Amino acid sequence: MPEPVGPVVAEDWRVVTSPQWYTAFDVPPEWDIAPEGTILSWKDEYDNWRDGIAFVLNDPAVLPDFACGEWSQEELDEAAEDGADDVLSARAVAGTRGGQGATGTEDSSLLLAANLLLANYDQNAEADSSAETEPFSNEHGITGHITTATVTGLPDDPGARCPVRDGLVIGISYLSPDNNLVGWGLMTDIGYEDELPDETIEQIVGSIRYYNAG
Image (tube, rainbow, N blue to C red; front, side):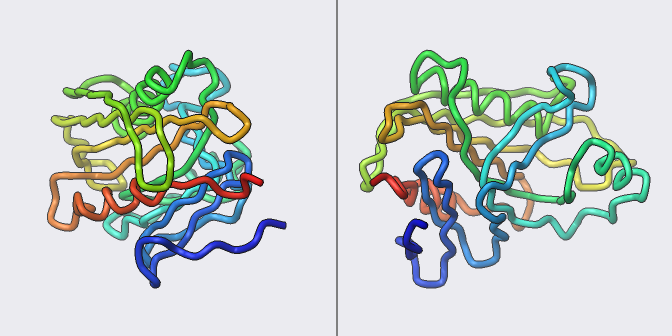
């Protein structure tokens, strides 16, 4: 078993570890961390993807959204039928995944950001979105590319269980110690009073580091 690792941002921050992708990163203390091996999936609401799943992240950390309404029993039953062990309402999520299908870190970061944005915010592609990709590095030796994408102008949905908000998505890709593409993604609601501060996002991104790399 890998040795536990401490946070690098602040003593009260929590560490998320993903041995499969040789990655660790920190999140603030109010975030929930799933057990290692957890798979978080976004349901395909409009049959746009294969297998009924729009997107997947491994070993996620979640900032709950307490502004959301309760899940209906019908929704819970549907989730159980789809094989889900649990459901959640989040205003921010971060986690890792592989870079399958990408040709390099630049392509991988863009694909991750675009697909996560669509899966979480705009499966019907009804809103305005933009993305920018650039080289990425941090003080922990992670180098690759980062894509920052935003979506605005989502149509209002009076029947939505959660508030309809604009969104920010970050996709980062780099090579693991065994030379495989790794993708790291973060999505967060923006444009409201309690949105995740830019400084906090920068601290989370800056804490990404190799874990259990031998």
